[in-house]
Image (cartoon, rainbow, N blue to C red):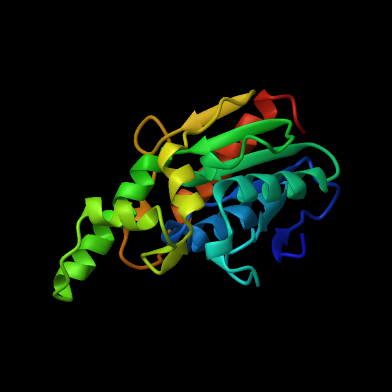
Length: 222
């Protein structure tokens, strides 16, 4: 694929490789530091942890406007296919929309969300920003614009194919799956993806790593 990857390895042979699939678009920036902390904790617990750039993300030379969800799904599956040994795909928020084509031993999802909800949030943010700039836009006008040309949403230029696929996307069934939320019955932490700026939550990172490790053992891995 030619994209960059961030990887942390344990001191010995990995119990498994945790393939991290972060949230999509600007939510990825807000959660990256916490996910990197979780990766370090996983490596300390005997796992390899891998966070790949997909086409159009981060340091990729591919323009985001040339990418759609299907391409991300295929690219992630390619990454998973290149990993030796057991693979656990660990997805956060919108990452769960692209993880089902990967061949894995197990899946773990944190606060999965539908694509239509993500798209509405991006469009509402655009409408608010345009209003502050004295421009008159609406969800309806943006939806019409998105069908004809790439649409700029929160700094991301999304192709018509991307917005169409995102609007219809739902997390697909996979097995075995651990799907967990935030709060008393899930991962203790704050919804970092809602913050205006990137942040980190060390306790949340430790909780993520511990839950993935426990799920791994329950699946008979390591």
